[in-house]
Length: 392
Image 1 (cartoon, rainbow, N blue to C red):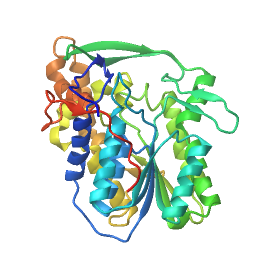
Image 2 (tube, one colour):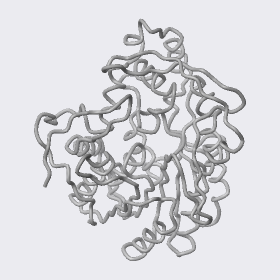
Image 3 (cartoon, one colour):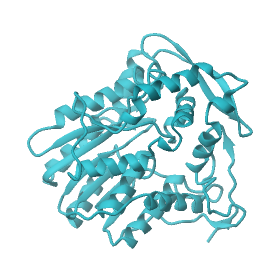
């Protein structure tokens, strides 16, 4: 047992410790947003189940449709000096939620890119469930080791074609600061490596591994989560090296779709995640978007509920002309984008706290690590040595 008071310590959008109670409460708050529906028993495999949209998809599936299955993520355990990562604590609470709901859901802590992880997970699926109905792929990683040749690929946050400078938001002692950040243009090798890490190759390998083991149930479907975003962030995101990887992910969906496999990408809306908060311009854009929309801005949980409703057939698939599920129409509506652009153009170092919803954004970043969560006593000691769930 190791109880102590946990305070937020870090720099910028990165914190060294996470708060176990805050992370647990976040999971409970997510589940509390979901209205339960009944359906036939479904088995899901969620790759990237501990954070962001992957966590929301896992909790939404459990709380709304009572899914069974396996979640895969790669988190760090607590040490004598540091707490575990936030995803570790969120996973422990998600497992507790699954148990309370009477679901047979397991969590594997391992590198999703590794063949050993695929073997472990597929063995578990074969033993417990005999197959899967759905595979949700939500992976954001800085690097990937190719298990076939041992080569390490590094993703690069770069533009394509020419350098680019953009407005961005930062914080000094909790107060917002408007910055200008520049990114260099990617080399061809950097683009290729980013595609190797964040494109569709590993997603396809998961589907192939399941198929080779005979673990695809009838009417199997798989969805990889992606993002398009605004013209304001386009040069850095969608038209940049990350965008090349997302385009590869979407192309992979087309090649995976065949008899017995329905493969789709789901274009989700903007959100504050550990991955997105590190991208220049995205934080400012999201804080402006929330300033414009307020409570009308759809949360990852609302979008994940919509995704599950479409996957289960409760509602029709909302597809665009390229066959992608669109959960971001609320964000890219012309009137919304016009209002956000006006706020973007108006933002200055002097008015940033008023033009953007900076306080909301900063609180959302802190909540990623379990801080600023209502109902949590941050002056009390909390147990940091939480075990990884051993199964439900």
